[in-house]
Image (cartoon, rainbow, N blue to C red):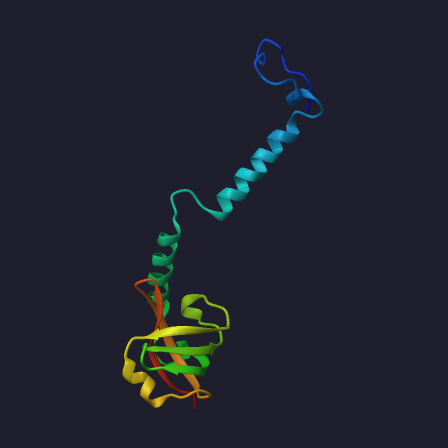
Length: 142
């Protein structure tokens, strides 16, 4: 049986402001419940952004199969040997659950950059190390 409560027992709510009882009492409660659910979905209890990054990279490392099948496709946009970085326009990086974009990566081995130049089509692997995404393997696409 549904009840519509407009004014609860005055003895129980004597200290509450009058405006809470005007109209439907359930509106503020529904808003509070919806806000709580939204917060819980976006940021689960006990989790932090750092926990999610570490878990995601560990999980990605476990799921990464051997061979070129797990390598992402990319195009070299810039090679920065002095800073040990490479700019790649890349497709999806499945192992990191990363969508296609153009971004700067650190490289694990600076020697990898010697054989590359802007415009080269490549296949590469990347991992997360010390909070940065690092290219660990790269080769010319065939």
